[in-house]
Image: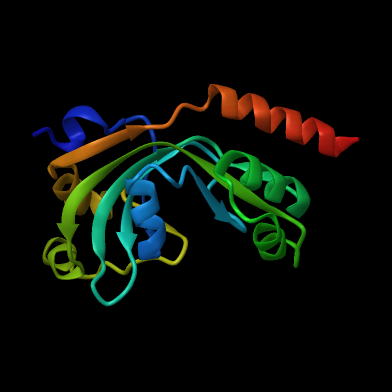
Length: 177
C-alpha cells in the first residue's frame, strides 16, 4: 500500500481541507461524481483532503481538481446535465439567485481509511472543519499536513477530461450566442 505523499500528492499544488456531505463523498469514491458545484471557490488547480460531514464524519477522500469553470446558471446547469447527468432544473435553481457560480472538475480521487475529528485534533487541537476551505500548506498546519500525507490510500480513480472539456467548450460557445 502506498501513501498519499508517495504517489498522488503534488507539492506544487495548493493543498486544501474541504468538507462535503456523505452522499457526495460516496459518489466521488465510486466515480459517479466528477464535478463539484460551488457558488464561489478557490479559482486555481488544487488538491484536497475531504472531510465527510455529519455525526460520523472524518476525512476519507483525497482529490485533485482542475481550475474552476465560472459561468451563469443556465450554462452551468447545461454542463452539469451533459457531463454528469445531473438534473438541469436543480442546478439552475442552485445558481440562479445570483446567476453565477462555478463547477470544479475532479481529475483524480482516492479513498483513505477514515480519520476522525478526534484524530485530527490529536495532531492539531484547534482544527475546525471549514464550510468552504482551509489551506493545509501553511506553517501553522504543517504537522497536520505531514500526518495526512502519511496516510495510505486505495481505489485511485482517474477521470478522463479531454472529451468532457471539448463538450464544455462547445456549451460555453453556444451559450455566448
